[in-house]
Image 1 (tube, rainbow, N blue to C red):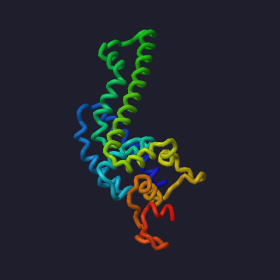
Image 2 (cartoon, helix red, strand yellow; image 1 turned 45 degrees about the vertical axis):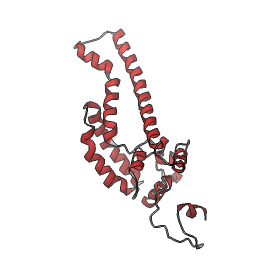
Image 3 (tube, rainbow, N blue to C red; image 1 turned 60 degrees about the horizontal axis):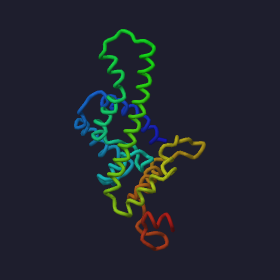
Image 4 (cartoon, helix red, strand yellow; image 1 turned 135 degrees about the horizontal axis):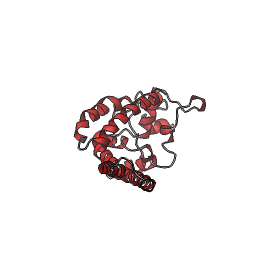
Length: 209
């Protein structure tokens, strides 16, 4: 629940960044300090040890095996390009400097905006798939199999579901960190070196013993 509350607060701030990205060209490099804060302060609160490749994985949508914690240096230019595309009909109207338009033109512009919105959504999905494929191409065969499992239908719904107490959908801080560790095969903090059965303890053994 605490994570969800922080995420919701972060969404408001993220939308402010998105407005800046969508209205200002060529500013991706200016978001590097923000990305540094995300890597050094935000992500370590949910995953103590992670590689640069796993950071790229965290930036993917949940349905592609990620956490949707975007890298602002990578999405800024893409957001601006899609914003320009989506608003082309409106830009054209503004450039004409007309005080009014007839019903036929108004309908035509509305139709164009709808088509542009569909095109933008398609472009975003294609870009996300490209990012996913880039991550997947750098994984070992074993890591790739695990990564593919994260993209299976329903595997990531626990990340996008509302944390409703009455349905048991809430996780405390420790449970959430452990769940992230299991999801990405990261070290689980506080795990004993030796299991009660006498064998060396690790995540795989802990889940099967």
